Image 1: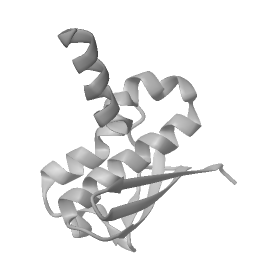
Image 2: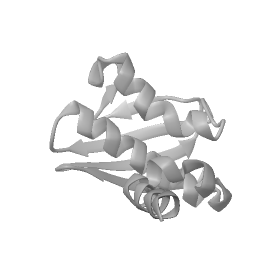
Image 3: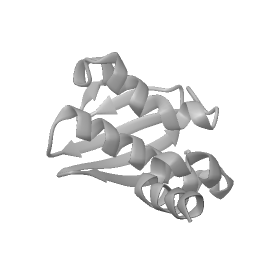
Image 4: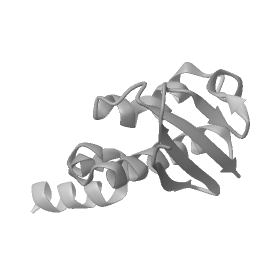
Length: 116
């Protein structure tokens, strides 16, 4: 049995509880496939971005429980949850995923560095 990685993402009032397990790249959101739950290609790209950034596409199965807010905020919450779970998988991925996992903090740091 493969190891299950957990990550939680939040955006506005949306909460995504993400479970990653090694597999073939099957995505399930509240019991539905990704195409049924997120009709927009831009939302699907946003969700897939953490896997693309670290070159781990089609390596994990994704099961997500979503609550609250609208689809766009839910997609952001899922991306954050995936990046947090991937950091648990390999802590060295943190530098690659920092734009997704800590966007507000990164903006403050870059502002402080470049504006002082």
